[in-house]
Image (cartoon, rainbow over all chains, first blue to last red; front, side, top):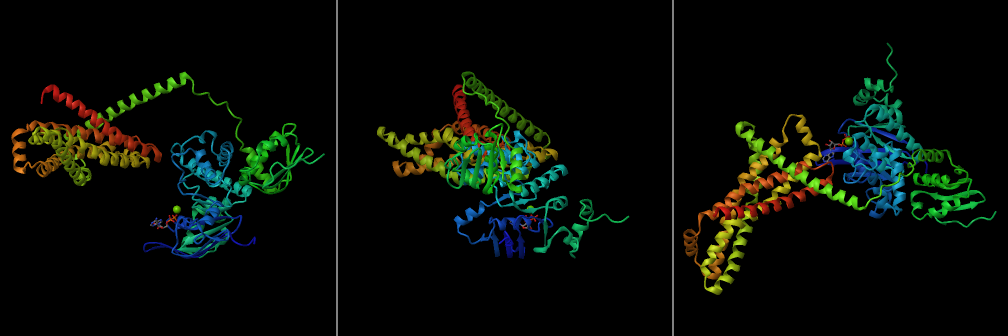
Length: 259
Length: 375
Ligand SMILES: Nc1ncnc2c1ncn2[C@@H]1O[C@H](COP(=O)(O)OP(=O)(O)O)[C@@H](O)[C@H]1O
Ligand SMILES: [Mg+2]
């Protein structure tokens, strides 16, 4: 049972009109791991994420999350299943007419029947956990910086202590110090809450710092999956360029070249 | 040393065992829904140790509960025992993120408070009026600049908006005005036939349509159709920071977005008014013929012979002013949209209500003015 993957994708095909994004994609995510998903812009990382959480109906293939099929579960079961994951979208997708604290309270309000003061306290804890300052709680998303919006989006994603969190480029657009703090945060919460993390990222430092395994999306499928060390041996132009490039060296994925 | 009965049996049990508070079961956010916190806190006050060996799931909410209960414990707080390493880590994380002690919330609702709020609202309203007028000034100044340098005019955009606000509105304006003519003839006839003065229905229709109703109702339809569209379009651009982007690129949003819309309205509203006049008279003529037996020829003769051209003039003079009001308010409210979707909706409806209201106020002022000058 411990070996059963929490996310299992088989033969996934997605297309928009005649534009095929995934063609026979397979992917397993193990319980408790941080899986980094990398790939060039437009290779379908966000689309894969949307397909897994059921926002987008794939043309073909099976997607199972926590042992249940996302496509074919009845609405009731899907609702229960949905509670067991949290999603942070690429640009935060906070509700613009709610304050940060109300945004984090929103899933609790929808799914549970808690007294308002408890909701308030729990939302406050989550907001502090993701490293937002105290006065951010009462602010509206338009009053926050991009990095703060991402943190708030993360706080909302973990509001109900899900088993899986999907993060779409959480550190893109953050300063290096903020990004490193976000990486630490992901690890910390993963350890504390026992999360499984599906992390879409471009950030080599993030990959190095938090990911247990890396999946590379290219040529409409998962080209390679394994530890970062494994990626160094993959023979594919994009993968080589990505993991052997100067940025990879700077992120200490590669040993420095002998002088 | 007797065991206290459990506070809540499912799904999380709280048992006080001497000075040891034992928790068992699920300590999760779901459990919190039914958990009796007050009773548990009462028990926690007598505890020195909180034992969670028997719990099988602890999440953030559960950890918060533990930390809150522990803080109630004897001697400045109970110790939490029996946590697995993961649970201990979670509890530490939550403890580090507990809310700061409550600052006393400010009292509200006093008389001074209410006065202050009233004053604030009046001040805000006056400020908005000043801003609206200064926006009008800015637009007029920009139009003046364009007259001096005609090449700055975005002609394509003006034509596009002429089609949007003018041409596309022709069917609805025509239909509405035709029906108003029909209604006027029908209602007028019922009254006038009592005096055998049916033929005066022509004067009734001509004066009311040409002078007031044709242009006023057209302006109201255009405010609802185009004023709201202006606010929504400019507002959503503002929301996505497109307006800021324009400014940084040295493009003036007033020249690019506002002036073409306002100019298109100033050109098209009189045209729509003219169409409305014709359709209204036509509707009246049809009804007069069907209901009163006033033949089209008699209607025309009476219309041409007996109606002062000034009635038409008065209606047409008002049109550009109404257009200016609708255009300025529509664009101004759009520019006021902030970062959230709610303000877009709110300001769109404000834009429609305010421009219709201002059009009617303006119409009343024109009535007084024309009465004084005697046309
Ligand atoms: N709603 C959509 N309609 C049409 N094409 C889409 C849609 N969403 C994504 N795509 C296309 O799918 C491809 C993958 O997009 P995406 O998953 O967002 O890329 P990324 O890997 O950068 O996140 C892109 O080529 C994009 O144009
Ligand atoms: Mg993406």
